[in-house]
Length: 235
Image (tube, rainbow, N blue to C red; front, side, top):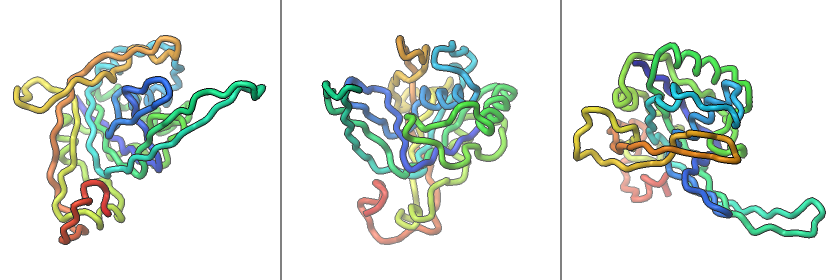
């Protein structure tokens, strides 16, 4: 099996897995449903098209390279004739965040995904249509390696301004699929973000087990001054 690495970076991202009614949340890292939606858009699949099992069975993991800031927006809406006003809705985003997403699967399937992302059929966005992709997505070549190896070995993707505000030793959080052989004591949670159907009339998602961890790296541009807010992006 091989790994395709993506850099997810843009002024705004939003990865909601538990949004309800007028409040649209974002979790702190990209969801599998959001990234598979990105791939489906690149391949020209419509929301009403079935999602093939070969896509949902892809292994998935994320590393947080640059903590974003949480931003809240609220929106108002009125009917076209102006007679009816709808409830205020709140939407949450991550500003200036950078993630590395690792997709693990058959090499030929990954080549097809890579080619589609480089020449997408539909516009690509990071979790929500108001968050378009603004930087090249593909990192390096497709390599034969495991999810943990790929997420641990990939160079840090954070911006320079961010690096200079961080300490000289960094711990980058990792959230990836639970794999055979992972220790029983590994921290894990169940997340409902495996898409079964993207159809707006009957959206459906399945569960997966996610293991959390971190990789330690050295930051030559970092500061040695004590900054208790560094983990949140600096003061």
